[in-house]
Length: 177
Image (cartoon, rainbow, N blue to C red; front, side, top):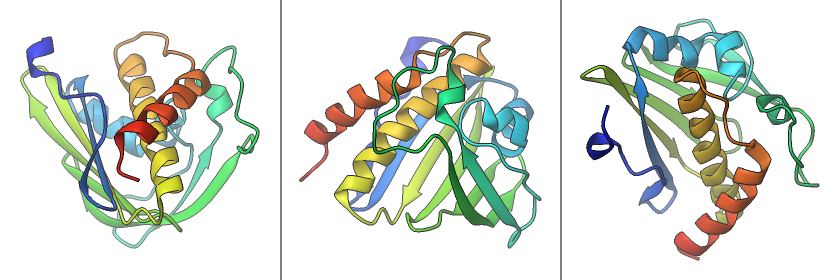
C-alpha cells in the first residue's frame, strides 16, 4: 500500500444525512472481515458484542472507548464509561458487505474491496438524525477507523479521546451547518 492509493482519511457527506469514510487496511480480506464480525477483535477498535452472521439477527454492541488505549485519555463529560446499543443485521454478504440497523441513529454499512495486498474498507452511516449526532459520529468513525488501522498494522493507536475531541471540532468546521 502506498500513499498514492490511500483514501482521504476524513469522512464526507454524500447526502445531507449520510457519512462515508474509508480506510485502506493490510489484507487479506478475511482478516479485515474478522475485525468487523468477531466480537473480541471488534472490541479492540470499535465495540464488543457477539454477532450471528444472518440477516435479522440481533446484535448488542458495547462501546468502552476508554479501553482502546492505555492510558485511556480524558473522556468528555457527556460520554458514559460504557454505551450499549441493541441493533440487528440487515444485510450480510461474507467478506464483502455487512449492514447493521443502528438504533436511533440510522444504519451502517461496511463494504470490503480487495486492493492488491490491502483491503479498502468503506463505512457508510445513513440517516443521521441531526447535526449534533453527525458531528459525534463523524469524529467517532474517524478515530475508530484510525484505531483499526493501527491494530491491523500491529501498531499502538493514537489516544482515542484526544483525537475524538480534535476531530469533532474539525468536522464542526467542515460540515454544513
